Length: 226
Image (cartoon, rainbow, N blue to C red; front, side, top):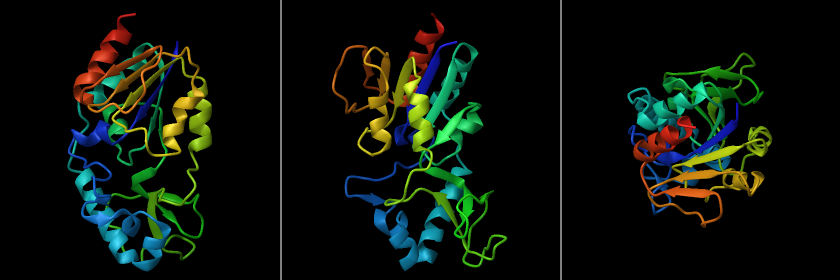
């Protein structure tokens, strides 16, 4: 079976009710991004950071995968599919997709400050005083600004093997994730789905200026017809 790599961004989950990462003013839910998504913000005000992610976690548990998430699952009948997502939600997993790489971490997990490889599933509020087995404060399992993206090398290796690339709901402006498109061959077919596609036309590029719930089923139907 051919290898399909799917890159997903905030637009993939927006129609499920997950707010996009930031608005035009560089804010996220009314907060300066650096206050809630950086090591400096965490060190300055961990209570604010924990409260912010507790609210995001609670919101996530109230939403469901949308038609776009569910459509991608169908591709696994005929293709080897890997989803590389910038999203920290678990909607791809809940929809039924098998192979997901989370570049920016996972909202329903936390990790130890003592050992970053000590990661725990976590669906309730995380509070000051919630410690790991090493008596170290737990923090959100999120890749913040200024931190390394530990899954990037794996994502690059997967993308290099892509025979078809699908990009959904991302501005392709956030690096290093946006750089992944450079690792596919110029002969690799690319399907780009976004209401405001920010990508330069090129050969073998199919641009669908549509929301994910409209564009993804169209692309999946086309690929399943081969």
